[in-house]
Image (cartoon, rainbow, N blue to C red; front, side, top):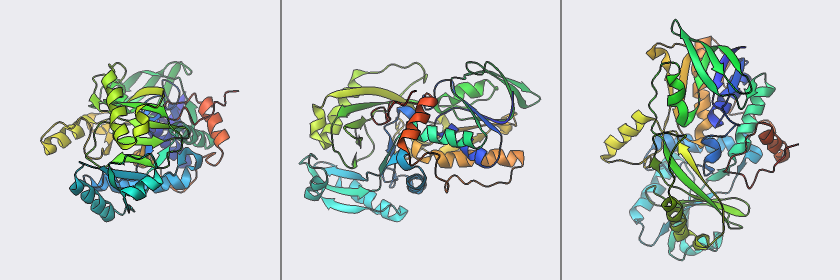
Length: 415
């Protein structure tokens, strides 16, 4: 089997790369070892960042978030839900931090509205009485199963091939190029690509090693707890330096509470601890007390695809270990021609909110190598099926793409 570009990894970024390339007329094939969105994308807390979380610490990252937030609200239809968000300051929280965030949002261009405690409780009646004030920001909720499926389907609709359950088992490098990729599962054969994109997130180090290339990842795990709670409007964020249990994400009749950050050695094999669940629930209940006793619906862990050198640089600049927290995580497109494999690149780091920008940057590099002059159009074209939730859910089922994040929202459309 031959293809111009082989994309390894069927999460948001990989599906985004496949869509971007297909829209530019490039012959592209996407493979994933499991169903689509089976890695980090489908196991997130589902927050579509406005950039406010990072505004005071990383202006560039915040600018990326607000820009992509607006793009997705424009193109993604029923893959997102425009809820808005509140950053709440509780009694005992540092008021200077609140003001710093408010001023940083203004500088970045993130719209905000200041609410006193009573006004905030008028928006969220169950909000803690200890909330002294809040900052309204344009956060939203993203349903990653639908988002990934829509990107993959759009790629396929423009000539791409999508193969879930097709694990990469090895690569043959010949004369400084990947000549062939052995793929099992639904393909069970060799693919001969002109270019290979490694979009496997936390697993990028393992995939890169197949080509003899080093990509140092430093993944961290985080827990999400979904509990019964009906009618929360906006996303709730604790207005303090990022820490455990500081985000509550609304769904229809549930809320997702998150999260922790614990470094893991292997994204496929890591311990989980009960304290992560109890601490997350307890901390979120400080903002929204009823969730303390709300019935649990499901609990899951996701693994963040943190890039090792970036983590070290951030920790060195902070003077302490951040545990994958603190400032916004940037993304990196690694051109492995510098390491002797000229038709290979990895995209690592980043956030679900910025997946499309990550895909664009990766596709730009690929097209430059292939001599393709077509420009990116993904920011201006609505995703396939974006306005039809039933169609989106049928695509999720077709690609076996149901993730934990939105399991209560996506309707099983298996024939």
